[in-house]
Length: 305
Image (cartoon, rainbow, N blue to C red):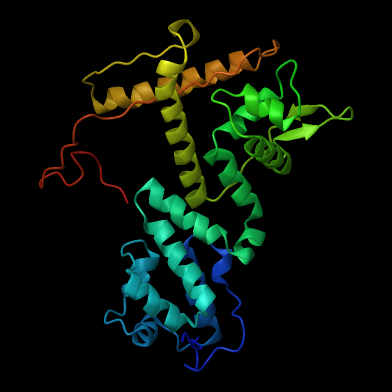
């Protein structure tokens, strides 16, 4: 049976702590806030004291984890939870949060985020964050946002579902409208017509990084499928394989950003759109990067932290 230990007395917890793990999407930030709270309440709390309670040999391990210099294993997650007095639900949430933050693959990150987002307290605190995750992680939602500006748009989920290419389900179309309205990215005017709006999206770094990677991965897959789905006069796909210097790479990245801004300015002119296109820009290495030489710890460039 799981027993929640009071981090101050070692006895069973009877009250919820001020700093709640359910309020965080970064477990290192949670550990920092939790430690500061416990230290303020009980001055004897220290990294050495925590290490003893967690049955960890190194008194500096907690600080190394907080500073992103060490990760937690499943066993150390359990030890941390016991030392911090987590309930069973708090431990399960903390464990999922740890592996969300530490996972390397996109598939694993999405798996653990979905588990984290099932928590009722987390959803209530991070409701806007979940909507923004949905917006970027579902390719069709940004497309529907652009669709509302086109002549002949109908706010009928069945019509929207059939209009997209590839088609989506009616349920997905309803979800798209719901997310767009709740985020304020689309609003209804006095006549009931939908219009785009430009509110800022402020998702925290961990989830924003995950959701935008989901977006890029899906759009790259759609680009791959477009080779077969559309004739050449309805698409443009080209590629180059080049040997370039690091300086040239940075210059090219800068120019691609500037070109993207030019396209955006052109598309947001006075003329209303007739169709919706996806523009992807990808530049990536095709060989392994050379490791810095021992005599040049930062590859001959100034070191920074």
